[in-house]
Length: 258
Image (tube, rainbow, N blue to C red; front, side, top):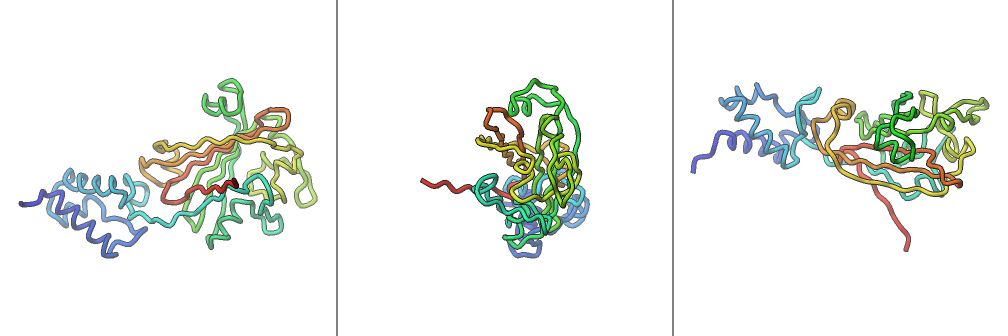
């Protein structure tokens, strides 16, 4: 049986991926180039690309750098000791627990930090047990490993928590309000005199928002979302950190003792 035109394009691209001619991370030829190479229409090319996207062989959508052959060498974020036990923050080297985790995996980490006051969405308000539109402080970190954005980590705080100080390098600062990567032994939440005694996590998969697509340079891919709410000894929810990550760049690992 004669193959449909889209199948010819699909088979050609899949063969290039399987042979290594198109290696993980390589950019897939653009739609117009494929039209010319195979002598087919743009809708035909898009059908072939859509099939490869569905199979997880290439990234979804064009993005800034075009579709790419997927890489399956994701970083691992180990949650077992995060915020309890011996943290790996190293103030001397300026790395926090997450960065130390990446370094242990042979990756080069960095984080882009921004701080803004933003009214709470219904979801964030639910996590922090406040009214929707309550003004909160969002401390955003774009987490990058080996020059690739692997997650967006948004920490949300009530204003009075965000205004707390601690000593870093011999001077008092408000670490939550500081647009820089802050590393303090034991984490800056503890250094501000706040003891989180209980946590609860929510983990889900969903489609990336347009903003997340831009920040992570992905298409309308599914992403993982991990939210952790920290609760102090009075029962107050003092912070929620929401991490969003493409599954081919990072995944979560948790070990529980029986």
